[in-house]
Length: 309
Image 1 (cartoon, rainbow, N blue to C red):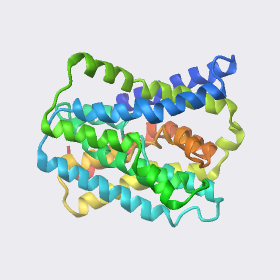
Image 2 (cartoon, rainbow, N blue to C red):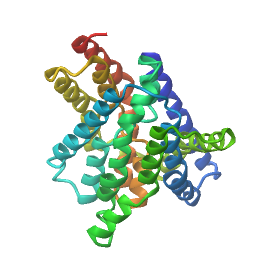
Image 3 (cartoon, rainbow, N blue to C red):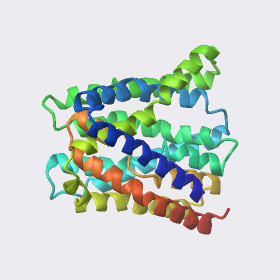
Image 4 (tube, one colour):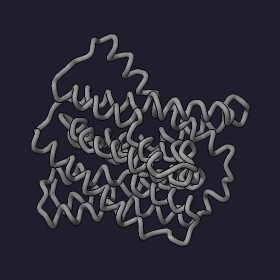
């Protein structure tokens, strides 16, 4: 498990470093970064969501709805909790910090971790958890980030609901449940495009870091606080609740592992597009990803002690 986590984190930073260096020698400028950011948000990431359901296989339906229900409770509870935090910061920075605590990198880092623990159906249950995460990210998350822009709340909410991420999630789930399979050529094309999401996201983050005030980013005390809440407080609270309510060991592992992942890599990209503080989300992504090498194995060890192997 530790090797899987380390491999994921190191690969993230290598790709980010490539983006940073490419920006430094002029191959990757802000205009290119902005264009790729929109490509990720509106094309490759929705395709990633869509193909995750089509390719995730099948699992126990009862467990599936349990995992979805747990995902709902976790995200709503964390949202309520963070509304009481960071009140002394500027509205844009507070929004970025709260967004960072709520939305984790449960897809990119969560899928391989679950596959390592549950080789047969880890991907399926991961997709079930990420289903609500995706809907929540593209509705509540977008609403949070865009609320600082000009325009009515109704317009922000409409933009949050009617977007490619939500459409992709719903369409992918429906096709998966009714058993429709795409032609091999089309499925391969969509999956190949979807898989660009992760490397492109890290390249963009590297470019953002090149043009960002690094001293300000890595000395942001509140980014460290948000990262600590994201990496330790949230998964330990989830583990405590699972223990109190005697949630099955399999479901407990799934929920704790996915809630223990660092801040979503897409956070700075979405913050830049929807008007929140991009530099703050850059800080939380970088800091939480580094420390996740230590915190995820710790959280998994504690989970094993509470719910068993």
